[in-house]
Length: 497
Figure (cartoon, rainbow, N blue to C red):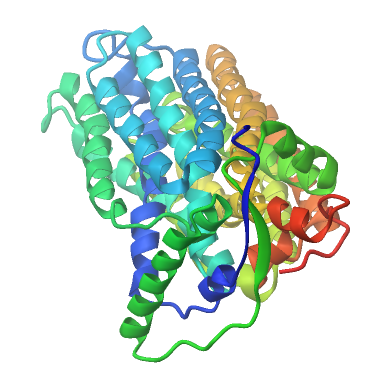
């Protein structure tokens, strides 16, 4: 018998009970245990950008060129794409918790390997494996967070958590200041210690993450409703105790046919046949933000040192990172209040237009004015980019959630995140040879067009998901089997919860 064959049929109120919970300290456990992974990603990306000069030194570094720095960024992103797809399908099959522990372990081991890299080849391989761990985290963590956070808070929490990438970026920027100071630390050890710090932080996150439960939504779909019921009762008891009030009863239920796994064929049909508009939407959002960020930020430190005579990039990158985090944090409540469509459209279009203007005046900018320009652009872009992950997590059925996040992350990031660093690395080399910084403006223009296009696609195809349960935005495939013998409802048909 195939593992995807029906194992039972149940009616449950677990989704409604999870969504009616008031915010409590327990939810902060989820945010800290799961959301802090973006700090690791930000730390990784920033260290690479800040360490570009140290890695180029053939004596104390690895003798990398500007193109090699871009290649390292591309290799990291390629690993993230493959890791997202590989671990994403395992997350939907074996559960959120198992995979968010495994992927963090992969990241930790690979980061330690990076710190001990004896050659450029070793460094590239370690960066690929580090990216694979982070890519797997994106799939496992986004799905787990959205299934554990109440609908009322899901938008702001998801956007703010994804924006915490920039806390890691700021930390990475500031840490590189003493680590790259030869009067404090030997240059041969400074960049290695920077990577080692990422592993130490990961171990701390792992200790907190062990206490985060499996998603009850995943459990009842996969025939483990008793375990899911017990977890929800424990959460309700904890939240009631922490808030000091009784929880109101719920009346909404959902009936589903349980299956141990959902075949890859059904997942593909879901994405491309049942929800084609949402597929186009997610691809547009991911490609735009991936090119913008991976192109600009992976090579920003190299741009400062190569053209603008900046010896220590840490302070510049820290300011840039702070603006990004503040944008995600301060704008995140508006994704629940004003709605997803208005906010995503606005943040994408505004940041795209401003990036185009920056490219036009690039030749007249100094290190300070370029950083100021970047800070304003990415104040808006960070909130929009974070909402891309929120969108992919919300608008597809639960059984496919992790793999859908992985798919759009991988395809969008491969299109924008691999080509971006490679293009910018080549542009920087060419511009360096000619001594003209304006040669890299073409990268800014491409990023601007892709971001504006993503915003316009959101305006036309965006889903108004604010305040709605996940099951009403995209009905579970197994519930559609139970209620609709003719097949699952598509994006143009109302889903019932």
